[in-house]
Length: 446
Image 1: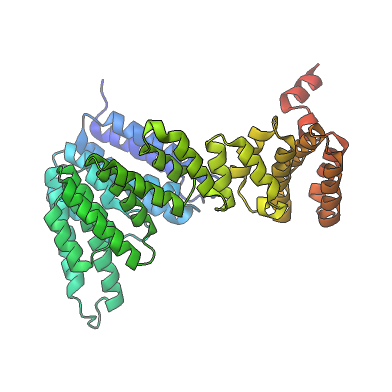
Image 2 (image 1 turned 60 degrees about the vertical axis):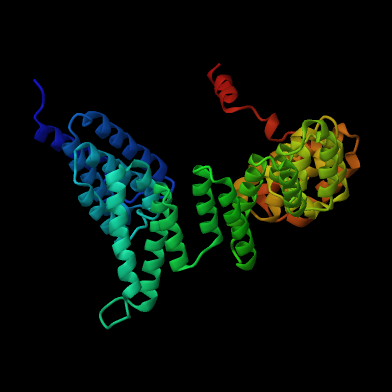
């Protein structure tokens, strides 16, 4: 005997309410598991109601309503929980379309949610919506967004109405939404008209270029790329758009068979920002027979650039001897300023062939933590110093290790939570010498 739809709905509503744990505050640390539970509920909902879309729509709206109500009881409403709720709107769209809902009704609700968005759940909702809306739904959403964009542009700051500042913010918000929607439709003329109405940007030039390239109008696309690069140089804070435009320019030049120009552009970009990413892009345009020469030229050009980027580049390109030389000539405080995401891989790679250099990198990581007084990372610092000690000993540099020990004792003797562990490292019984949890458990059991 199958359950009646109403009974099944009531059952799911109880599951939704239980997962939302109403009345209980969800701390930041607990937000991950809380959202995982909500995702499990949503998966059950999608599976169980795939044959009854109208019922699924109602339950998705119940889950959305519950999430909005829960927003005041969670410490991470704009993080992982906010992402989940944002995606939930798109699941609701799919259910509505499966149920045969009127596209105009779907669009109406979407713009209402976008307009009244106290928790930021609908920030950039239009981007997700373009991926799930059908042709009629996308057209309806554009109509409603355009209406709000036009209304925001006609305000005069009248008493009782929105201020000029609020109206400008609304117009900018709806204008960005329209750009996203026009781009999804690949409507070049509509996008260009909007951009000229609100002020053409480098990002607009990139969008127009990509749409034209999709229509195989390479020459027209390249013209917009050039215009965007010029515009980006005149306007501050357009570096991201400028990077995307420069990358697209090289791709388009190569497509036109202008490989020499593409290589020259990639070389210019590399000279300005030498790192492992611009190096990889440069080598895409280098003829196979010339790669060795260009590699040498690129590595030489990177000398004197940002230290962190240089270390990453030399490690990525397996220039380990150059990497060792770079580390040797830089003072400890310079190495300490670099993230462990950069120095740790380098230290591991150099331990066997240049233990003296690896020791300096391990010390820099440990010093970085201790100087910053990051007590919750003291265990990591102790592991770093232990590896540094082993590297110094392997290199026959016991005197250098003793200098590190003396400096740590002198500068950080009051950090008792750290110094006890550090003295264990000095004595040769650091973290790696301690038995693991399972080793301790087995010893106790026997």
